[in-house]
Length: 140
Image 1 (cartoon, rainbow, N blue to C red):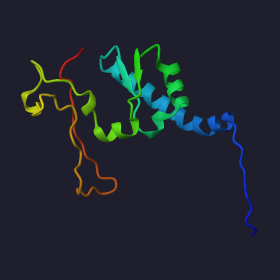
Image 2: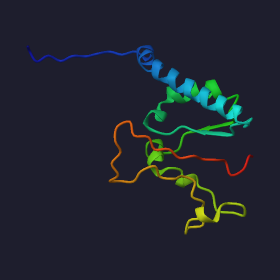
Image 3: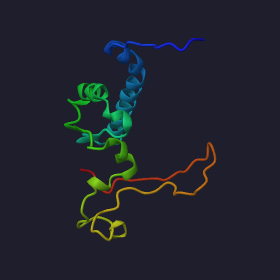
Image 4: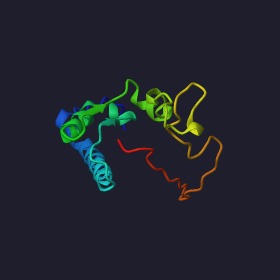
């Protein structure tokens, strides 16, 4: 086979067609999560953070804002959405206050909002379940 230069031209609509199935799945999962929240007595979702690499997509952001902007007043993308997953929520962790569990107070005066499912070096088998139960501290 000869070494030839290939040029592939992709139009915006072609790219949209490639990503639409994934975006539709994400939108469906968001709908299910919001529905589940309503079933559990939460009438409003005040904020939604889009994190991870794909959340940098302006097309994904536009679709989510179009689909949920009337239900969720604040839909935000952090400055570095890729690392937001790794950092957890430490950038948005709130200061410990009256009524917060003392055992979750960190040395820097903030409240521990996330718990670790596994730590580096832990071996987790394929299909092994790690189960933790969480309850809201209060209902806003």
